[in-house]
Amino acid sequence: MLQSTQKRFLALVTIIAALGGFLFGFDMAVVSGIIEPVKNQFSLSAASEGWFVSSALLGCIAGVAFSGSLSDAIGRKKVLFLAAILFLISAIGFSFSENYSILISFRVLAGMAVGVASNISPLYISEIAPARNRGALVTFYQLAITIGILVAYLSNYFIQLSISQNSSSLLAGYFPGEAWRLMFFVSAIPATLFLFLLLVVPESPRWLMKQGRESASLSVLSKIHDPEEANKELLSIKKKITASNNSGKIHLTKKNQWLRS
Picture 1 (tube, rainbow, N blue to C red):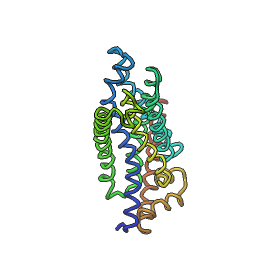
Picture 2: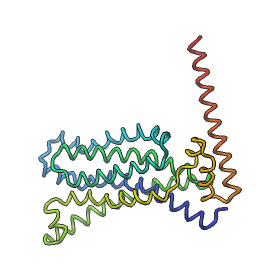
Picture 3: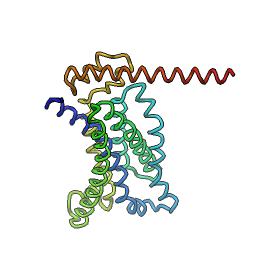
Picture 4: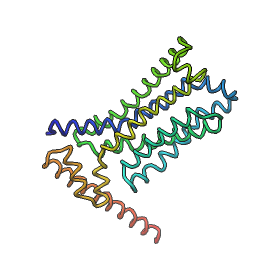
């Protein structure tokens, strides 16, 4: 049975990891409010507009492609840090872009951040969560995406409303006729929060065990389990990793036998 301190820690870690999902949803939805003004400001053709919208998908594919193997090599936490940095750089860079090519570059970068987060955030949550809570906690990541979408729409609406109703407002002064820049810049706030909150997040116990760092893995598990459950979970992780390694060896042996025959 989880103690209140362990429950709070697990909830905190899950919420922080799920910020990757929030940023995913926000980034994908915020574009809806900026397509038209960007099109008008940069005089985009239909093809250029289509590339502007879809360019993030290219980055997303790249992010998904490299994040899995990278997280196996350096750890889930460090790759989540990378996602947060990519989100932050893309938010700031896109907001201050002065030409179409730079806009596209930062959209690709934002897409890459989305790809990394969509791959590693739920993976991290599944590896840190107790088995009995795993399904619910991974689902929280999906909820965070939905919340991010909602916040993006609301943010776009209130920014546009504020500037249109009060042309002498501070926002209108800093972003004259370019509310779209502020709409996207807002995502720098949760990205910064994500980056710094990751400092309190432990590494995945499964990844630590795969690196042979058993004591470090047990230390993390002890923060979310009572001592007896932590040891049971450690043993379970060890067995699963061993079974996975043996399965890979058997598959490789059979493949070699087939090739020789």
